Length: 217
Image (tube, rainbow, N blue to C red; front, side, top):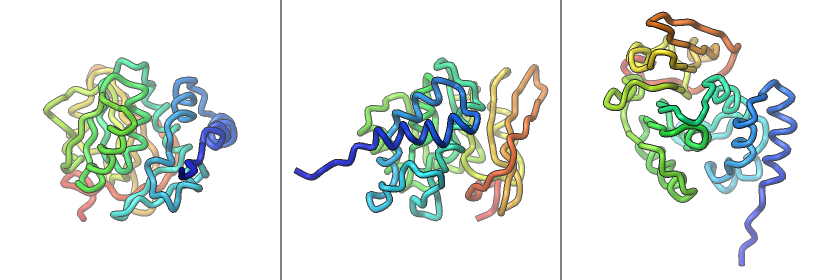
């Protein structure tokens, strides 16, 4: 019988050395980061690097984000377990799994159909049943199920797409990397009685958010 590596210790070490010391302190976020198998969302040849402190390629010129960035963006959404969440950029499905564990329902949109199908299969295999998938231009959001209590964009945009702001519920939180194609700032938006309040979480680097309200391909 083939030996299946047990990454539990690697996950624990990731939480203790990469997340907690850098200010991630939401106990629910730390617990889920220590539970979701990041190794399942990357190709087998890279699985030994699954819990290292850097992004990894997943094909189609896309990446799975560094664990710290996943935790930081997730914590910024202040999820309690009751939220309806919109994720723009399914990618590998790893961030989707984290969101699904921490909210009521996740609606995730991915431009690259092959990635969406792969992520959907992995998440189904892991037993997630509170995620809906769509292959589409994510810069339009997913109007059918608006408004959303929280929106996460996992690709860098030249500006915040207006459809996403429109689909954010009052009191809702949105997190998105905004900047040029080489570096971005991680911006959190909170919508309060129609007003948009912004907070900057500092520099980051993401792949391009391609679409009508993002970068042209």
